[in-house]
Length: 455
Image (cartoon, rainbow, N blue to C red; front, top):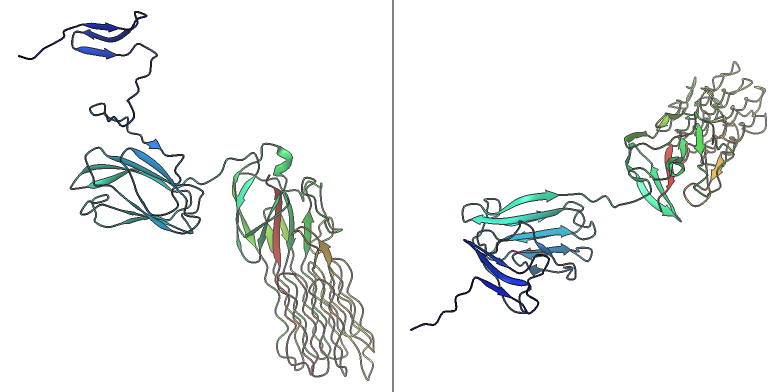
């Protein structure tokens, strides 16, 4: 015969109800109290709330087997690994989350147990998106583990501006985005302090190509535009346009398409009558456009040809003037005029150098080709770099033409000596070609650089 103890109420010594039966409802514990299972004890019948217990003290860094009812942060920074799922049982739940946004470079593979399925299919699934997380619930043998939640939110919390695009580097508390080709500067978060949303930038267009023919002008440098925000501590060029309103760009949550201008082609085959070099192509960031450098004038006998207008003007041939820089006009000026060609008297003469962002191209003389105008230097990338130098003018009956301006300008050609191309991603103008010059003289491509405070 079994024994029974029948009670409707159990209270502690302070007369607090610990177990109360009322009809079909059994209440365990007083309101506000906590029920704790003894170490090693298990519970059944209570069910789950549809969530997991996150194992914040056990960050996974290598292959492991998940446990029902638990969530795991997975750190693949040291290399990809695998999460093995336990044998499925109805209602089992597992959550996994990218610990520090590395799934895009080192993935996490999820492997089912035995013949279990994931989302109705046999085999593994792979998490390979930055910041991705997933929650799986086991339903039955038909579907197996079903993903009920999947996210790829990886944007960190910040009181500063957050953006993507280009090649990203840091310098102190600043982040720098460098575009050497077309791209997108995408802003996802604005800074809490409005001053930190004002962007520093340098926008440099493609340089003009050198002309061809009998003593041709050097290409003008690509237009150069810059703004230095007061919160980004670097030494800007003399062309810093802050705080003028037309030059200032304040970030908004949007995507800014970036255009990086290609350099202009040279005038083609150097044989007479020659052809003027092509203008460089503009570079664009938001409302800021830097104009391509003007092409160098063709050399075509004693009549002479004027250099082309542009960000900086191309050099002229013979006794003609160089092209006009700062076309269209900006404030500060984005470039300077090209130099004039020298007199056409025998036995030798030099063409004008292309203008640079920092100086006018030099005039040619009977004894030398004009040097290209110098560019300007900025420390926006963290070190001082000079860009937008003009191309040197050609000279006949000489080993070489005029020197290229500092900042990527190409040296002009001479008797049997190639003209030099403008340097890529500086906006340098190409050197002018002589009749006897085999090749060279294309303009250098431009660049767009954006800098802001990120911490």
